[in-house]
Image (tube, rainbow, N blue to C red; front, side, top):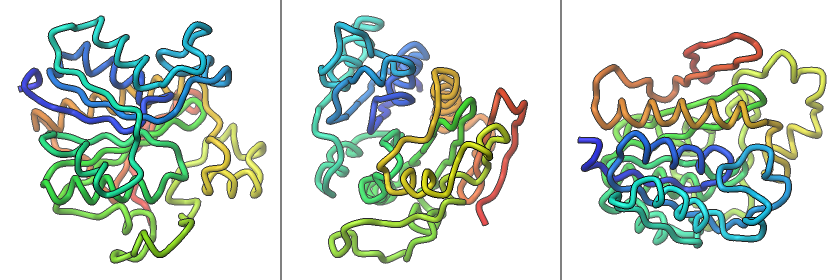
Length: 249
């Protein structure tokens, strides 16, 4: 079943690149990846495929080359377009068994487009993000809560009529690490919400988030255990020694 499955990943930076590597090693037979970004020096501390020889190269292309070399028999394809419209979201989702969103915080419109496309095709949409030394994951059942509802936005929001979406901080960071409370100012939080600044993280956090996403992906494909669905989320932090299943308020 895993070999016959098709999984798409939107965004192959910190978490997404490592996730693609884990999925191909788990035996997922078909993987699609998309990312318009290019590797920068600031990516060297945490992103799979990031190296001095890969600087300024497209992330999706580099990750594609890396994971194709792991399993040349897998059906792996990539593009450097990303998700900018409903058409691109539909094209990525078409024929997939699972969609995983690893785009940057702040890409709220793009994420909603992707989850809407997944709902139309009756498949799960999964998001996993790194926070410091921890990770947060949420699964969206195609018949359950929408991403708009989860983020506290109107369910029928017209994405073409607005320039910038504002998402409540508690939906992005329902659990704030104890070691971040003093360092994370109100201004910093607003910059993170607007997508102008990444959530502080490291190789431990992105690695943990990718493992969490890979594990959930296998469970969704095989349905061996009950799936934790939005509004619930999974949160793990290795420095705080914390693992919990919470619910957004």
